[in-house]
Image (cartoon, rainbow, N blue to C red; front, side, top):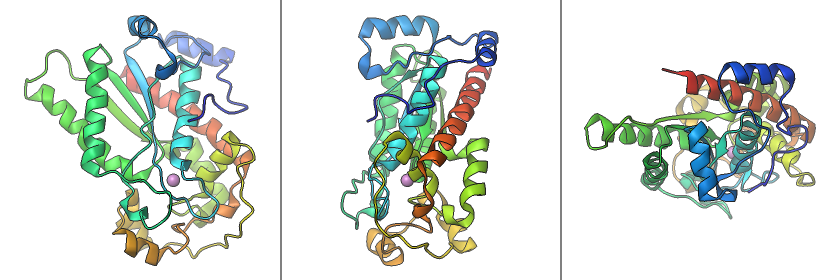
Length: 288
Ligand code: NI
């Protein structure tokens, strides 16, 4: 877990952002408030001004010869902390264990079942909803989180749809950091096919930026580009079992030329993703 956003993303509001935030009725803050660093009375006070929380979601799994095991969680935390610092949004504990069974053939991977992740998300949201939280914004760094999270959200809403919970249903959104348009444009421009699907140069660039000195001097020659059919069939980390996966991708990278990663790219990608997260989060709160 990183304690603060990286250099160049200090959460300071410029004048344009300050005016924009005032118009949107958002709290003005450049202070990052983490739930685990807050007291209970401070959280109760926060609820008087906002009913929203941001939650990073990652994974704990191999990322090839140069990527860190915590790459997905580190990237999601960096974006969520940037969002929290800029807009004064409370940031909850990261969900750092996820579905990664396809990577269990590689040392260091921890996988939980999809049903476990769904149960965890339901309990996480329902706990805070009981206290008055209404909008849950998950910043995602791992493709295999998408399907279970969406399924969990539907099961959460179903409690209200079936009339077993009082009041209004909370709302949840999951957004993967690479979906934010400016970040997506950068990674496509810099890496093209070399971005691949796993141990991507974009996510490793972000970890190089937030953890200076984490680069590894290990040779990782460019892997062949992934066929279009593979991209179609295996998006969202919809992979087969661990033995098959290791047989297909011997060093753990899935079509990604990780060696293209640069800390400077990470700084720009992170800034673009935080901008996108702030815009998307604001739109999420404004939805009627
Ligand atoms: Ni990853």
